[in-house]
Length: 507
Image 1 (cartoon, rainbow, N blue to C red):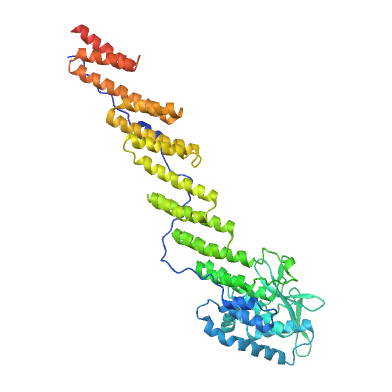
Image 2: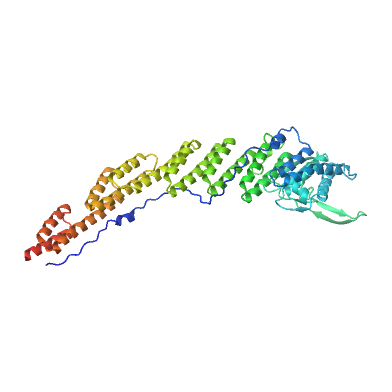
C-alpha cells in the first residue's frame, strides 16, 4: 500500500471572526425600580390663586403669604403657623408704639433692622428660609430675614423692595432722595459699606463697626411678592438637593400660581432673568426633574405616564418632547436587552401619539432593528432566510445603509453556515456567490467564500485520501480528476493527482 495521506482540517467557522452584529447608538439609564407611589398633585393650592388675585398687598398680606409659603406642604407646620399672624400683628403694634421710633425715613429704616434682630433674629443658618421656622427658632437666612424686614419696614410706613443677586437677597429702602441697601442678615447691615460710630453715654467716641458692601453690581430689583416667592424657590432647591423631587413639584406649581400675572411694573424691565427664574419655566423644570427621577429609578413607564399627565396640564412642546423621547428610548432599550422585542413594539405604538414624527421614526428604527436581528438569529431554513432578507431590504429608508448591509451579511453568513453543515461547502459557496451577484461586492461575503473554498478543498482532499488509503487507486484517480475540474490548476489537488498516478504506474 502506498503512502498514508493525512486529512486536511476544515475551516468552516473561521470567517465568523470577521463579523460581529451589535446593537449600537443606544442610550440606557439603569436603576432599580422604586415602589410605585402616587404622582404629585398638579393642582395649585387654592390660597395661591386667591393671593394672586388680590389687587394690592399690605404688610399684613405679605406676612400672611410669607407664612403660607413657609408652611404649605411642610409636615407639622400648618398647625404651628396658626398663631404667627397674631405674633406679627402684635410685634408691628409694639414697633409703632415705641417712642424712640425715628420720624426720619433713613433713621427709621435702620431702627427697624435693629428691632427685628433684637426681637426675632438669633442665628444665621444658610438654608433656613421659612418664616414660621424663624419665629420658632430664631434661625434665618438672607431670604427669611429680608421678608421679615420687609413686613415690619412696610408696617412702619417705609417704601421697600427686594433685591437679588446670583446667590443672595436683601432689601432697599426708598427714602425719596435715595435707595439704601439693607443687608438684613446683619444687625448693623443698614447701608453696608458705611462706618458706624459708637459713643458712650457722655457722647465720647468708643469705636466703630463696619459692614463691607458685597458685590451688588449684578443685581435685580424684585417686588415684595416676588421676594416672598423666593421662600418657595429655596424650599424647592433644598428638597431637590435631597432627591425629594416629588415634594418639590407642588411648591413650584404654587409659586407659578402665586406670581401669575403679578409683575412689578417698576422692576420688570430691569429684571435679570438669570437671577429671578421665570416661575412658569421654573415649574416646568421641577416637573421634568421629577420625571427624570422616575427614569433614574428604572420607572420609565411611570415617567411616560407622568409626561402625558403633567405635559398635558402644563404644556411645553419642545421640552416635553425631549423628555418623552428619552424615557421611551430607555424603556425600549430595556425591553430589547431583555429580549422582549414584542413588548418594545407594543410600547412604541402605545406612546406614538406623544412623539413627533422624527422622534417616532428614530425609535421605530430602533425597534425594527431589534426585530430584524431577532428574526435573523432565529433562522432555521432557506425559506426563513429569504423572508428575512426581503424584510431587511424593505427597511431601507428606516435603517441606515451600513446597518442594512450588516444585518444582510449576518443572514447570508448564517445561512451559508447552515448549508455548509448540512450539505457541504459546495452549497455554501454557490449560495454566497449568488448573494454577491444579487447585492454587489462585499468584503465580508468574499471572505466567507474564501473560507468555504478552503473547506471544499479540504473535503475533496479528505475524500481522495480515504480512497487512496484503502488502495482504491483507480477510484482515487477518477475522483481527483473530477475535483480538478471544479478547481482547475489547484496545487494541492494536482499533487494528489501526481501521487495517485505514481501509485498506478507502480502497480
